[in-house]
Length: 127
Image 1 (cartoon, helix red, strand yellow):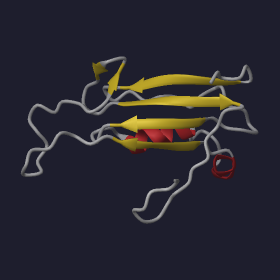
Image 2 (cartoon, helix red, strand yellow):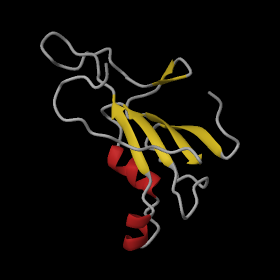
Image 3 (cartoon, one colour):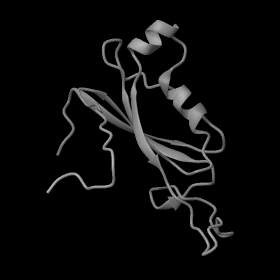
Image 4 (cartoon, one colour):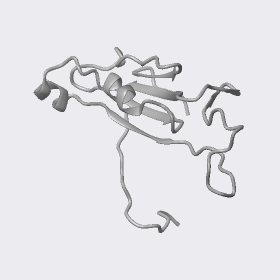
């Protein structure tokens, strides 16, 4: 489907210790949402703090915190369970592998957003 004119989806990439800034596309009534996918070596705490825009006061930050969802990719492992020597990255963008410590994401603003659900157990959800 098409993205409505009241919304925007903007991709971003984090490499070499750089950090994304919190999106200016959000408003004070509805913060942006983010889908974030990182390799195991990415500085996730710093990336999430940057996306949360820790500039506000504590109460304001709680009230307007963005929804951040995503996952961490798994590196190539040897049969002994050790990260393979040739595993430089597990994240790619536009078909090109990014260096270790990288993450890619999408900022959803306007009338687009995320709601998260956590399912307990190992049974599939759906038909």
